[in-house]
Amino acid sequence: VAHSMHRFPVARLDRAAMVFPELAVIPPGRIVLPQECASEVLSRVFGSSSSSGVVHVELKNPATGGRAYAGLAETFAPQDGAVLAPSWMLRQLFLREGDEVRIRAVSLPMCSFVRLQPHSREFYERIGDRAQAALQEALAPLPALTA
Picture 1 (spheres, rainbow, N blue to C red):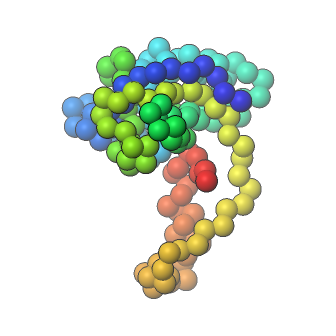
Picture 2 (picture 1 turned 90 degrees about the vertical axis):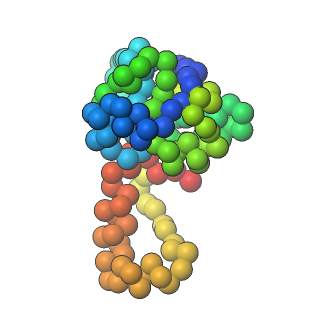
Picture 3 (picture 1 turned 180 degrees about the vertical axis):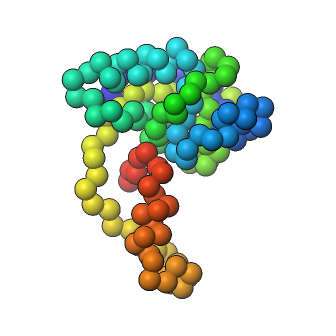
């Protein structure tokens, strides 16, 4: 289920955090929206009967069609008119600062099982017997895990 779509220029969250220190504590995988957009997203999500209490948004690069999913930070962008996203998310979507990104609220199904396979034995050599615990710890702060 998707709600309204907005278009905004995108900016790097880490760069904005140098100017606005309160942004440095945003958890991984979260984006910061302008206040008006965030308020609308929250009212639509929590106003629906199927709300789970978790707010996910889809970021879409209109030029390539690439999509990523993120959680919504519990703060608003200090400047209206820009979405602040982690650098790794911009790279994943082939976006540069100032490029347009489309934002919409989405409802993602809850995952019940994930199978991950390391690319090399080096992972097991470094982690040892703690592979499952290490992966759970690394993935826990992320609001969405999609294929």
